Amino acid sequence: MSGFARSRSVALVGLDGHVVDVEADIGQSLPAFTIIGLPDQAVNESRERIRSAARHAGVPLPARKITVNLSPATLPKRGSHFDVAVVMAVLAAQGVVRVPSDTVFCAELGLDGSLRPVRGVLPAVLAAVRSGVTRVVVAEENRAEAELVSGALVSSARHLAELLVDHGADPVLLERARIPQPPAVTTGSDGTEGAGEPVPAPDLADVVGQLEGRQALEIAGAGGHHLLMVGPPGAGKTMLAERLPGILPDLGDDDALEVTSVHSLRGDDGCSALVRRPPFQAPHHSITLPALCGGGSGMPRPGAISLAHRGVLFLDEAPEFDRRVLDALRQPLESGTVTIARAQSVAHYPARFQLVLAANPCACGNAGGTGQACTCSAVQRRRYFSKLSGPLLDRVDLQLRVPAVTYRELSSVGGAPPEDSATVAARVASARDAQAERLTTLGLRLNSTVPGSLLHRRLSPGARAVEPLRAAMDRKTLTARGFVKVLRVAWTLADLAGATVPTPEHVQLALYFKTTVTS
Image 1: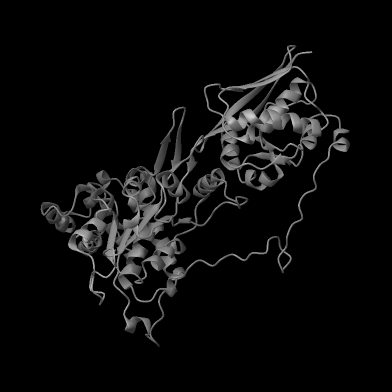
Image 2: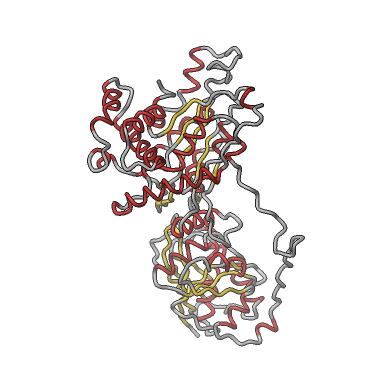
């Protein structure tokens, strides 16, 4: 007896999800199981998982020709999360269950019929809800993640037999199936789930001296600006960079959902709650281009720059990175997205991050008056720093030299303690509120994203204030892009000072932070 039925799932291309119709037809021909519609290897292998899972659930598949079509057929289908949608469509065609049209299934099947968690549940559920499909079925381990999407009606199961009974199958299946017991929950000493304590964020109070570095860090946090620090080893460049996320405000609902979606697609653990704190990524200098920008065989996965979305990407010892890796940052720094092209599809990932670069003054680190003789030749020094190309440095708003900490600063006793992160974060939040009040009507949020057309006209600080910038451009020490960067930083300085418009002093200080390393 032939039959036809349909279920639904979601195909992900980058963070973009598309609802897929899973059509199953049971014919009268010789036994076969065919999946069509651009499936990848994981989808094709689901045939064996489905046969075994259905048998362990007490409803073996019929010995007939089974054809499954994943529609639209032109859209690549990748991943094991189609398993449950396929088995539900086949069993509905067999007459075992009834599958509603307003439900998507997103889970992998084990050979014993258990439902296994998959990565990318959050963006998949988000895409389904935006398409008008509000009912979602996932594995038990993915339920908390799926429930993060507002408007989603989430249900879960641990075994295929439970899911079949929920959709109209004979309840006797639950007695026949061997349903695994849920794992025991570990508890901490206080009786709460999980034994780990949250790791406190690094605090600015730990940074000794470096007044100029602390000021640059505060400006970067307030306006969302990129930062380059050049100084000898041990000066505190890494300490400063690691404390930038601690002075940034929590992410809003939309940003938190987007950031959590990226981490879900990456397959990171702990996506049961929205990521509210700005992420921090600090890859090693041996990182490859696909690891930084995203890539891999099959479906491209997000790289470090997307994992740093709405947070901080820190490249320590920046000149040690491959030149191609560094230059690959240029396009995402401008557009806020990274595009990965494949033969059959193009994946887009968000990449609106703050870049922080740290570098020694030379390969040995002793150049610049550290009290030790530099062993690098002039050619070696030029070669070392030439890894940071001019176009990349031109996109970095703040550039400063970080001197070595003196013994007097390190051993000072009885002086005023350094400001902690909470104090600086309060000023950063106030400056961001001022930006929001000024820029929201323009569709913008941060000074670092204000286009040059506005800075030259509506948000121009006046001819007197920009006179030093005109002179710098005449001397060829400042480019047109650098002109815009300086004005953006000047507006951030004004917001931190509570001014309504940048003063000439603000513009001068912004120009200093832009040219102090390259001059």
